[in-house]
Length: 211
Image 1 (cartoon, helix red, strand yellow):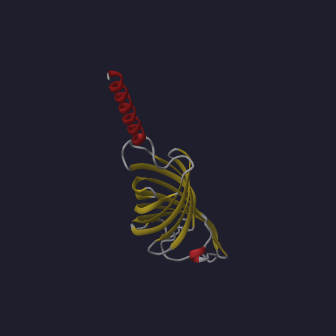
Image 2: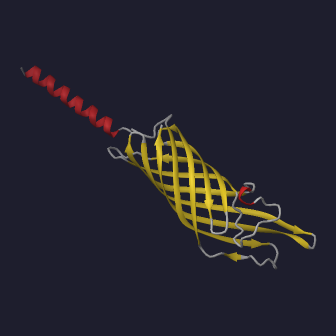
Image 3: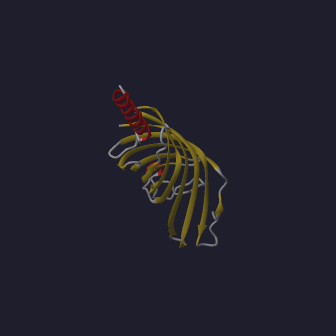
């Protein structure tokens, strides 16, 4: 009888240990997983401009402006928690709209027994936003579909909240820094350079479909 009882205790303890281990293991965002994420952002933007010409009237900073964005990204996890995420953004400014293409690297943390996964993301890409906050385009511009000539640095921190086995809600604080350099020249003016720098800070809300 004692042997049977001891055997049952061993089996029960082993079973509980296996369950605890299973709960504590990473269930999502594992190696070879895929995730498709879409989100919307609302925030503020500010552009500064500096020129090598002392007569350039645009030197200085613009006022803060409302900024919004729609984004779509595809993530592939090369290791547990570590993913590469190419991202396409459609950016809306008060005086412009443009596309951005960004290559991101992201790491998703795992908290045992929790359905919340904190994450961090950094990336670099190209943007069509050149910071002309006075509302005009250079003569060779194609407006909304102009070339992606500006550089953009991207950084985020946020939470992925599991809603089901195939869907997670995304809450994210995002910062972008867009820089653009252009040489301005004309028939009656001496060539000079203009550097514009745009800072974007926004809150993003979205969803991630886990594949």
